[in-house]
Amino acid sequence: MFLKSQSIQWLFSFSKNAGTCLGLSIGLGFCAGVLLIIQASVLARTIHEVIFEGHGLTTVMPGLWLILGLVFARSALMGISRYYSGLAVTRVKEEIRSRLFEKMERVGPVNLADRSAGDLVNLGVDGVESLDGYFSGYLPQLALAVLIPPAILAFIFPIDWISGLILMVTAPLIPFFMIVIGSSAEKLNRKQWEKINRLSHRFLDAIQGLVTLKMFNAGKREAVVVGKISDEYGRSTLSVLRVAFLSALALEFMATVSVAMVAVIVGFRLLWGELDFGAGFFILILAPEFYLPLRSLGTHFHSRISAVAAAQHMQKLLTIADMKRAPGADDLSFERVAVRFDKVSYCYETGRDGLKNFSFAAPATGLTCLTGESGRGKTTALRLILGLIRPDAGKITVNDVDLMNLGHDAWLKQTAYLPQRPHLLSQSVLDNIRLGNARATVEEVKRAAARARLDKEIEALPDGYDTILGEDGQDLSGGQRQRLALARAFVRDCPLVLLDEPGAGLDKGSREMIYESVLELAQSRAVIMVTHDREILPRAARVMVLP
Image (cartoon, rainbow, N blue to C red):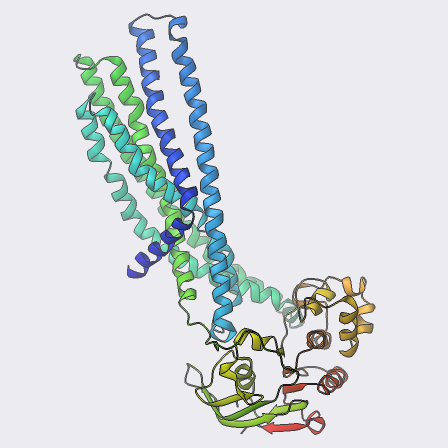
């Protein structure tokens, strides 16, 4: 319950940022409600004059024209109101997406390691989109449900206090049933959100591993698994819809019974001569409109439930601790970089030791290899150098300056990093290499590709450097992927390059091309490479075996 109230407060805080648009939407909606009351009054009076006072068409024509004008005015106001509510929700979604992406950048890849890509994509896309109905429908309707019924009561009570009392007493029953039934829907919605996250995660994994599934003839088996998860999600959706329809039925039933009670009272009072027809008809026109904002609120209440469920997951992401960044200078410029570890230790939150009393030095030029058994902390060392994590003990220096005293963003500009599986964009080869340096010219990109031993293979592609790659570079072999990522390091031209097993899983020919490029790269800068391949160790300037 506490998390739920926190999520509601968090969502409501964004309404302040779109306050002008939401305020205009609510104000215009209220004005449309006032025009409805005036329209009902004119209509009731006109019909009363025709039936009971015998007025002809000429006499009532001004009233008919006024009714027509009020109808058009109400339609215009409601249309403009919807426009402003849509504008408000667009601004809110942009801000929330911006916050989520900025948070992911601040948290860093290490702290997000336990979150699947499918979960994050679902949160940033479908999760944010699920807030649409909350800001464009629920919040404006909540305000109108508070404003319009009292305005209608203010007109009905002076005419017939009994009808007004019936409306006032029965009105709270609608939100009551809405909340009671909505609590069940909320539990189902949370389960549904977990299932769609599971489906997104599994489906994304299946798409990314499609080639592997085909190789092992496991495509049909995976399709069955995805189908089962999809069916579970479908059944969960139907459960939510059942509750939603039950809620709508309860709200409609309450509103219908209440209107019928008012109609009976008005009918008897007309029969007894206590009301004239115009006044009674005016009350009967307004009675359904009195409940309409409350019924509409009930319709949008399920948007609120979906939004709160999404907000809870967003808050979990936003409360993850930020990656600790050094508050140093933002303008670093090193011609050469020498890195030194002095008795550095790091322990992960799970309790696993990443490094323990580890010391080594990487000179400003040449290849330094970190090797050893898996789980000894080689990748942890690269993460420490990148500043993605901070040591629990010991000291890391860069050119005899404590790494913790260097601005993190400025330090990253001095480094290039090639992970075990570099990510390639579904863009041109040129754009993928330029990821290392957005200002690089075409000639600089071509030189970088040549130094990475990839230029001839790129030129053989249908459109050369303008060839659009498939999702995550699926058109390329493993060796080509690594060499393309290595070309990014060449075009980046920074003093420190970090490589995490660039030759892993490749054939001997591909490994040799990569190692030749790495050794060329190391002639003019510091290159630190994690590797299990003993073939490259004799060619390295320095080798550090992690115990």
